[in-house]
Image 1 (tube, rainbow, N blue to C red):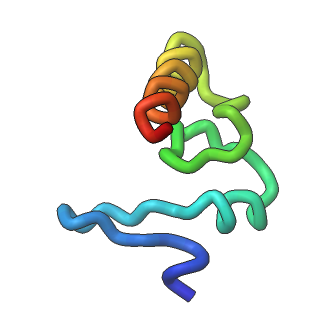
Image 2: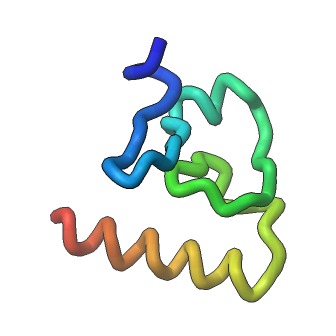
Image 3: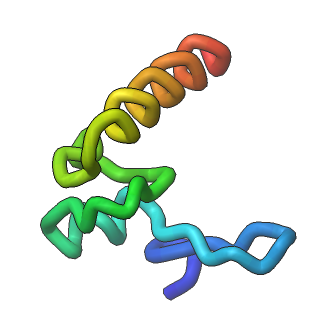
Length: 62
């Protein structure tokens, strides 16, 4: 079901939801936007960059 597993951006890119990624059960290391595993398998320095960006985005949302 699309709403639970993924959504499609206006430019056509498919984005998996955190719900889907949790069901999958592991971090693929690709830096998924909704990664619920804190990018554990993403190589540095990209992992740190993604975590910093996520923290900034969360502060903006509140």
